[in-house]
Image (cartoon, rainbow, N blue to C red; front, side, top):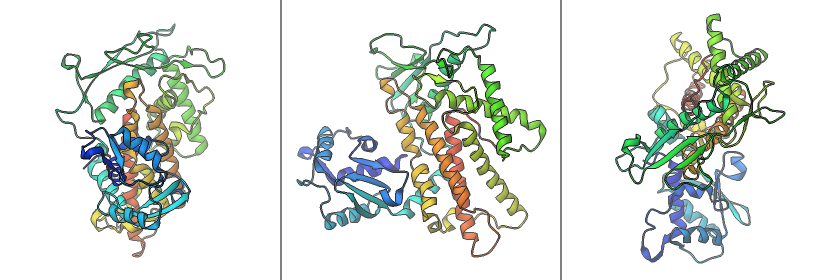
Length: 445
């Protein structure tokens, strides 16, 4: 099965409306995930799903015709609107029963758009089973000898501050290279060594400035931008060591203010705060596009909720897992039944659905989008950080409104078990996303 099920659904939806010209296949030109990024044609949502639909599509045929013609296709029906009446909308719903994810409802948002809702149970089952079975490989395509190849090289000047410490700009460059390697390893590309390059190999040079004014023909330049001071917007003279210490101090102060992070023992606190500081630096450097200037954080408050917020919610997930395990060991709860025995209808509630559909199902699509414009010299690491920030926010709302571990009552245990499987899936995806950035999750709250 396609590791990106939204791409597979997009193909099925496109083929419902379009057909190859003269009966000839489009030669693989259609990349279904591109439908998500075609503006007016198709939009997958992750907010306000009840009102806006799980996704919406353009009703005006000419938008689809323009896209279809570029793929060597034509629309199946010659009409001004794709789904002009209830009969056509029901036909789509009926046809979707044969697809990877069937539709439940189609409504008219406004004259030019339709809102479409999925049947929730098939997606919930697919997502939980896929995430918990594949674990750290969820969203990772299978590689074969036919997979495209890539060679990645780091080009650095190795500058140092006056006291001999590494400069922040070089640290950002080095981290971009490492993140790039992890992302490529997780993608459908095969990493090769320099001596194993072929004519079709994509060569990527990670550097602090473009090697030439015109785009080179033999490689792609991936530029890591400067690191600036917040007020004067001049290059910072702060070393990596000093900035890590500063951000670790910020993390300690925020943890004390929140009264949330409480390590198991005093011996762990320095190590924990060091990890938090390292995570904060990664977020500071990559929450903006990698070629854009990053701004050092002097006052402890970044432009986003940042690493502290994400890892605080990571710790919440770990605490829920530990608490459930301790209650099982104490005989309060029975062990978690197999997933196949869980009543997943419990997770069809809007808040559960928001996590599952808006974030867990969308994770493979996110990973594809991060490398979408690589051949134009862009690796969208900032999208991964934004995803983590938004996932943490969504889980935080869920945590505040949903009681996961309740008193043991027979009628409540199906709810506990279903929500624990969701917690396990959120934890897995969050940890995978963090690992791609080189960030360790936090264990304690």
